[in-house]
Image (cartoon, rainbow, N blue to C red; front, top):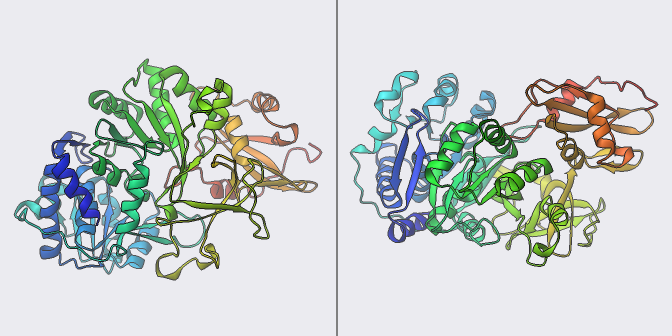
Length: 535
């Protein structure tokens, strides 16, 4: 049972802290695991007695990382209901669709998302209760009839016996951030979440322990914050919840004040923090490791953090359908003896397979390819925390007849189980019968000193089928110089990979999970013609 994790934390690590920057005020809140367990039992009583939540009901959250969101994770699943985390960065129409599809009975939300709730509430027919995740003093922003979190639990008993039921019962529900069609729901069971947390606890995976201080910058509405809210209390790790303020200055303040040793988040977060550190001359000496996921780790970002600040950058890979971790990059002892440049080549891989994740790479005909570090194909996975189907039967074509999930990634595996993604199946650039890795091309472009973000997309070409167009957002104050970028790339990638053109964009379109929206770029440049076909 997921409730077992919090019971264990309260008993064995009861004085360890959860530190939150409150989303509604920006002030710091502290509570111990023992106190969190008491409040969670009050919340469980409120869910079952006041809100009439029953086993199997879906209870949604639209919330930042905070102690209250942590309590909801455990109270909802603890009573046998399902935590349905909603990504507030999605279009309101999609949020309405998801709440309706899940038939959510109640929605808990932070004050900063009150405008969303005000706009969607009337359209959400299944929702019986809206709960503002603060106290009554912050209710002014909400037009919808609602309760407040603190009032909801204030008069409830701290006596609650956590029920025991089938470990395969649903505990969580996340929807994919698919760019085409309706989002697809992925259910997580008590068993899968507990096993995933145990696997990530290994020293060569995430490996947080009672001596560590963990700050998940990855939101709790994004694949359960990569499992950190389960793994941290399981191991007695001090947990830092950054709330809504994810800018460089705010993150640095928390890192310094709480001696954060391990941080997790997408590359855009670390680019923002790096800019702050360089502009202000600050350091983050307490941080030992950073886990990056969501998109590939740029080499320039790895070198900046490791060389200037002594922070080990770890790349991980996974998906909503995988709970999410599948690989994490930790060097083997024999690789630690290699020179720095050889180590960096390995660190830019997506990482080694985590025990429990079965993986195979197959060609277009479905034939399994060897783990030789060069045979690229379509990645398929299965395992005890990997989805075997989507919620309510959607997307059956994503699963093979013999039980493997088709990830949509193109990659190769080496003899040590290190995975290297060369592209998404839909993003690979096919030119003259050969493949160009958009990921490798983007990472190379990110090494140019003026480039803040880069995206390579394949555009139609009358001779070569497709050629790469590089779309670039330059750093603040930098010059938009296409020839400078192309000259730089000529020394970094094969000659035929060099884009036929560079286009500049003021602000790169970013999706709900922090990834560049290539679908949006394709829409923007749908009528694009290269300046010179002969090029």
